[in-house]
Length: 307
Image 1 (tube, rainbow, N blue to C red):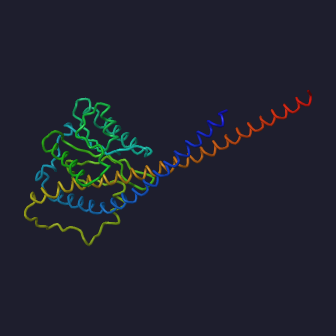
Image 2: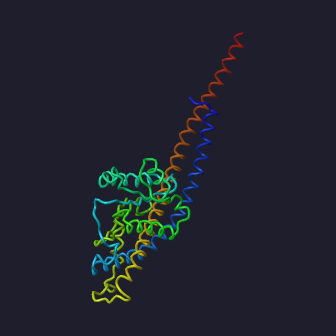
Image 3: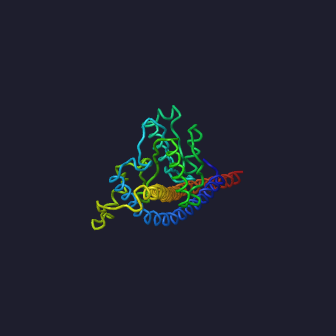
């Protein structure tokens, strides 16, 4: 059995850890509230912009804009993988990394083996994980979530777009955690470039769009485009890609804070349970020590009387 000194040391250590996890839970909860506000304010605009692009593409010749043109599926592929910069968020990072590895094994194993697979990892955890495993990494976006901004989303989107236009890769996909609620996330693999004819909807988008659709504001089929279709697309499509990535970064950030809050809450509760067990052991050990001392004193007294 552990000594009283060891038990006191362990109790003190667990109490200190519990204070840290409780503080981290409170910080994550405050960040989560702000992240939720940002994503809830961003989603309606992103959804509507997606609807505009889908309608434009449906009405226009796909060859009218280079970002609409689909290429040979056997060409080079870029995967944009969004993770966090920090850990202590439960399975948040491990889950999205596992989903990315599963997608690579199922869809792009030959691309990886032949050097036709590229990864752009937004967040430190994904960058370091795949970097250690010899993948071809594009750019360095570690520390993105320390000071998240729309400029970062634009930079990532522009890099993916430029590589597509230059022919370095022929398709781009996004892999990330979508914020569902505080305790759960959806692991999403979403096409990015080229912009596809069918509108991609995540589980959260499907549920939220049912409340956002308004029949009184549907687009008409006889629209006249000024100053011209290509001029409009040159402005709208890059903006759409940047804003789509911005929504995804906000989604991932909110999901990360929710996962961290839950993980720290669980850690705090586990520390409480551990403290109960340690205090019970401490009290038993203390009682044993007192009992042993009483027995020694009694035995000594009896020995003196016998002498």
